[in-house]
Amino acid sequence: MGDYSAMKLYTTQGAPNPRLVNIYLAEKGISVPKEEVSIMKGEHKTSEYRKKSPLAQVPVLEMEDGTCMTESVAICRYFETLQPDPPLFGTDAKSIAEIEMWRRRLELLLFMPAAFSFRHMHPAMAGLESQIKEWGELSKDRTGKMIGWLNQQMEGRDFIASSGFSIADITGLVAMDFAIHAARVPLPENPPHLKRWHERLSARPSAKA
Image (cartoon, rainbow, N blue to C red):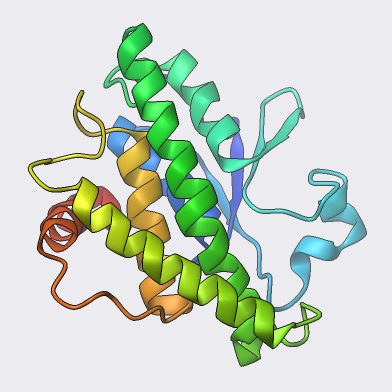
């Protein structure tokens, strides 16, 4: 295990992108000092924080030399290179491509519409977003349809990619939890395959990271 004590991860409890990184690090057994950034208090928009994250995003990984990296999957890929085991991005051409295919599907077709639904419909976001209710409702409907499609795809699968547990599963878990609990997207009636997968991932210790 590497020593990452000179680094710092700026994170936000409950926000989906920081959670993805935290779950990933827990699965890898990587410990990085963390500092909480309150989005609701606007701490991500201060001039000092924008020096680390020009787009006012979380999470941010600050390295020992002061270099700051944003984008959750980029941060995960950085640590994957430093500490390849256990592999969560694949090990050969086929598994790497399959995992990336599923990760992108889940990011673009499940998480993004769930995020649009939340940002444009939840009262707590009214002060942070120029809300368009119709866009939120359309996004919520698209999220529900994607959940139904994903349930069909998960039939006979223990994990999203055939090579086993991966960053695609982490992406899916974070997206599903955000869709259900934050965006409040209703689940299709009795989605057995998706429910089984979701329960298995939720039971992993990393899910609480």
